[in-house]
Length: 261
Image (cartoon, rainbow, N blue to C red; front, side, top):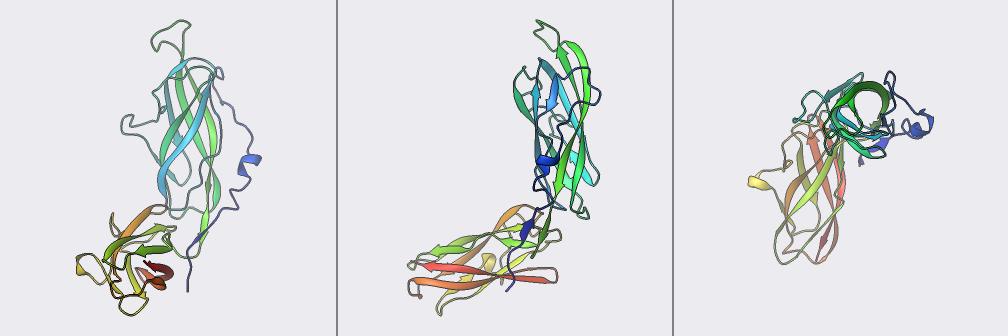
């Protein structure tokens, strides 16, 4: 029986230890800087928000940061459009830290690597005593590292290992899945096995169940599929079932423990 995928992140282990601290490439003063130059690991084909931490040594405002990396598509929050700013506004006081987030999409063909991501930023160094965002405009560039990690095993991981259902009444249960590779489209799930008398059914009287958010499962995301268990004619106890996940020409199987109480 095939088992769930496991993440192979050896390339990312120790990355923080070998990365030197970076400093602004052409900033006039170190008023604003990246605290940790290592981003959260991502999988090939994955899309998601990634945060970076910044610190200030002077009063700064109108902070704007853009990002770029090979094999990585970057988009920004809708309220800024072409750049990202700080989570609590666009200003930062000396000695304080805040976060700047980017929405990254990694190409499906991207290989395991430590990918440099260039962060270009501008800000205004506030004039002494200024109560508005006035002062000297500064700019800089720093490099962060995005670990691209690989997976082995099945493209879909079944995260639900057991369900508990009452004997007295049929109930719907949610089985949670996560995609670890691309190409998981039109995912169909069936449950088989178990004791005599157990009745398994699916939404809309279909012969299978599908994911709640849609047939496709994007890389790195979770979704659930609903399955109805009728154990009214089953003795209380613990039973082993088989869950099959089919997508394209692939069918994976995993165990599911059914507990009838």
